[in-house]
Amino acid sequence: MNIAIIPARSKSVRIKRKNIKYFFGKPIIYWSILAAKQSKLFDRIIVSSDDKKIINLVKKFGVEAPFVRPKKLSGNFVGVLPVVKHAIRKLKLGSKNVNFCCIFSAAPNIKFQNIIKCFSILKKNKNGFVFPATKNDNYLARSFYFNNKNLKMLNENFYKKRSQDLPNTYHDSGQFYWGAKKTWLSAKQIFSNNSKIFQIPNTESIDINNLQDWKKALRLFKKKMKPKPSINLVSSNFVFIGGLTRSGKSFLCPIISSFKKAEMFLVDSNVENISYLNALNKISFESAKYLVQLNLNERAYNLFISRNVNFRKSDYSSVLNSKNFKEYKNRLAYNDGDQIVTKINKINPIFPIMFHDVMINPKLLLESFPKAKIIYIDRDPTDLVNEWMKKKYFGDFFSNPRNVTLSYKIGKKTVPYWCFNKYKTYIKIRNNLEKVVFFINNLSSIQKKNYRKFKKKYKKRLIIVKFDDLATNSNKILKIISNNIGTKFTKKTNFFIKKEKGNRKINYKIKKKNRQKILRSLSPRFQEIFYNLEKEYKNFK
Image (cartoon, rainbow, N blue to C red; front, side, top):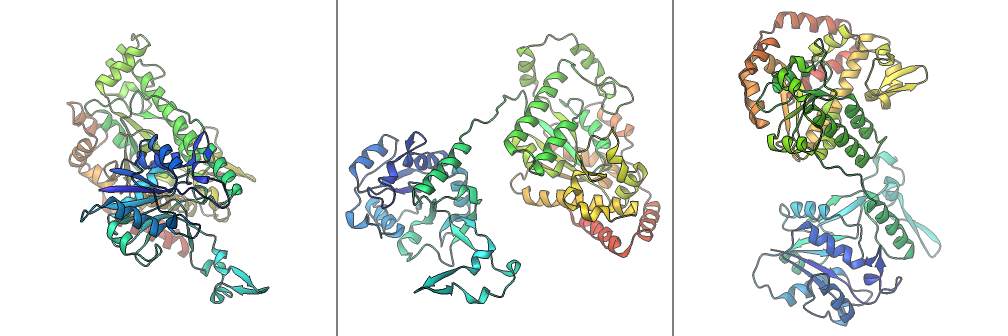
């Protein structure tokens, strides 16, 4: 059982009747109540107040105020603990196991998602409190104060330490505290060895103590409440197939397109670059999300009326190379209209999307399409380096007018987005092979780091495939993939496996020679980078 306790006394020293002062068109306490309700965690939401006006007001918002808090527990120097203890005792819950969340009444920028996240931490930490906190700037560890005009450091041990050696410090966000009933009743203070925090950004943490804080919180709230671009999706059933360039996307995409209910795979460099721009914080997440949805929504719809489809035989993404070209030919006669949306909803097709460096921004893709999945193909560094060298993916390639990879002009050089923040290192590299190793290392490390970051959150939506396994044991791996994305082989699938030379044998002698050749041409520094790439490839699962 979970119960929310929202303390709301009548008096406030610096802001008159702060707890019911209007904030963005509502009494400020309303926003705390709303966050509690939106979390859908609470069996009861209780307001503890000494003021009958507040009690009558909050009942209109659909919450309880079953008692009047004593005046002795409503003074300026009364903390949270005695107020919550009083509420627990008044509720007379006996021996029931109950978790209580004390939510501050003047915290309009609370995110209900953070209430949920902190509760998840509490379930693993029953002996302490859990609350949101914000990281301070490191220099605050060197803070000082004045005592009778004499300067005193809070901790003199930090005076001579470098800023990077100072400990991380945090402050309470002033929003809410989770704790089990026994913890609340036995605790002498909330900050203890057993307490845990959930870190939130500074922009979400404003403790309203004065009118300046109020105005700051209002500015933040207005920004949060701005209308967001929205679109109704014709489908959310996208499968993003990606990895580094030359990792094996063009092997896998046609085969997945041969699966039951799968459409011909799409390639969209606009969507890729929107993803990269958001990853670099050049455009907001909400803007990027809308643009990704808009582009792929349109592409999916157009595919069902064969509008703007690729009929170039030599292109691997051409519908002429699909499992059922006649279907796309027939669709040319379909009338444009809502009946196409109805058709898509009825069939519920899979839309495979070839996506370069798909793990640069997986959150954007998976949040844009709730049913989407990502297949990330990992390939042996020796093969990647060889392929990149053959294609001359270094230097001048990114200034070619045909290049569609997000790139930046810095001085006289055009550099791809993935080394934008490491430009000074990149321009010092003269050896093209070392440039390639540098590029691959940057791209690989970013994407594998993101996979580890998100694999728990999107556990069943992120699929890792080793290219060597896919190429040598194609049928087995493809069966696993088809099960994961909720489909199965068709009669045409084996044809496409053969066409892509699946179930092949890899000549490891040649691969070994290629590896030795690469290592001989690298400096000791880049040999070490290459060894780390190999180690990461071996351990990545």
